[in-house]
Image (cartoon, rainbow, N blue to C red):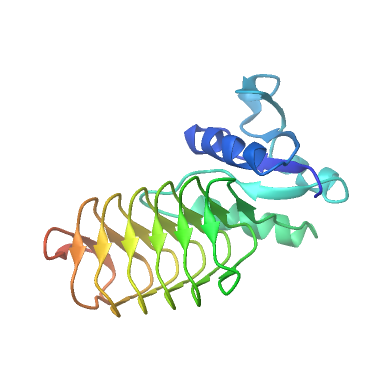
Length: 211
């Protein structure tokens, strides 16, 4: 395994450091805001900004460690910057996570501690599968999503690109969630939803339509 460069130095970065180290990775450093260069984040030093990405393309693989709750735009921008520089994004699976050998996980995706990905599931690029998430058989999660802590994505579900599914939410078997949708924490999504916006509740209903 090549060493890692993490891009983004907030709270999510701390979780990724722990997951990556548990999986046996060595972390060269974090790229963050200019004012944070030289500081330490847990066991890892902030060694530059995202403008330094090209300098590490031949030395390390990258992980986007900016979080995503309301909007994935910054994560997408940084992902594209790595790709444009010719860099490679690592796929991190924490030591306590389980990913079936019959599942596929895209580049740049991080599978946090105690997450479970069952047979036939397909997870896209630059996705966060957070702690204790469960992605069941044949579910599909598209690129640039965040499936938050303790969420249950049941069998044959399809989650579109750029979605955030809040903590402890449940997606009923076989439903589809369209692109650019946010589901609030603790929601039960019983039927497919496609209108862009913010949903919440039991059953989850559209609360705020995206502009």
